[in-house]
Image (cartoon, rainbow, N blue to C red):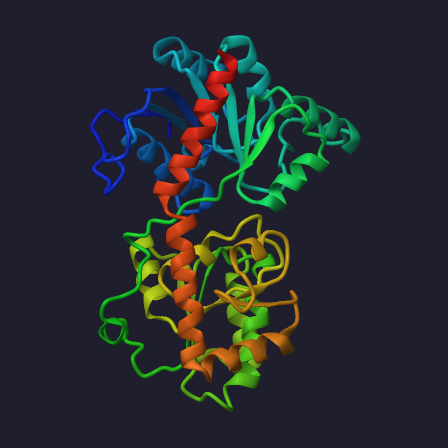
Length: 387
């Protein structure tokens, strides 16, 4: 499938954005390492942020790739970037990732526009850049030199910012701006009982939910093991798992071997609108991950006023505050996971209060309006410093 080169011309009608004060129009080249039509945190970022920046009055050219072209290949060719620079003449170049060092060196030779990428990983995946047996020290030296070519860096969490600093990033300023949530889609349901009836889960309580790529670091096997202790006390309990991934078959087999398969529905990959409905319908959102550089699904659960159970690791405590909008447990601790689930399942008033706190936090910090406004300020600051 060929690369995609898109430009938005029509004004995006997003409530409240166009009413903000008039700003200087900036031409922004937005480079994404994948297609925004795919599903995932970076894909959502690449799909939504350009639209919101354009809604704030800026001209945005999006250069992206098809997911079929990502595996083990140089992520961008010279010609598409050169074409975009010559025809669009951007004032700022924004990346959705810091993983691609060759682009930073290349663009420094092709344009005087400030380079401002976002880091969404907390780690860097440059295996395609080096020969197989390249020393790790050399890789880090190249990474450090490349990142210090930049004008500014946006990190999705304080945790990611600390990783960047530990990697030796000293020249560009680093601003923490989280990913955004579509609060018009992820919001409390006006009729939660009717929604659960519509989804055929009205008879279950508590209704638990995880939405994630099914991989080992998400900790979903801990939830399955926790069900063994929860089912005797909550015989109407049910657990929904939305997502797919390399661990899907193993998790289904584990549920069967534990004897809890009838309490679990593996829903597979779901469209975003359906995920929002499951968020609205559940009683508790649970995802005891072993690592998250941010944890966007916790923000989405909060936007739906759902209490969250997560782990005290990496960037998660920046999103989920213990005893405020959720409960935090040590990663891999099934006993404490059982206690946290029992606590929320048996105290609806407390669970609802956590959910309301999460809703307020999501609206104040994680709406796309807020994310776009903060990103706009960083891009304009980088441009002003260049001029």
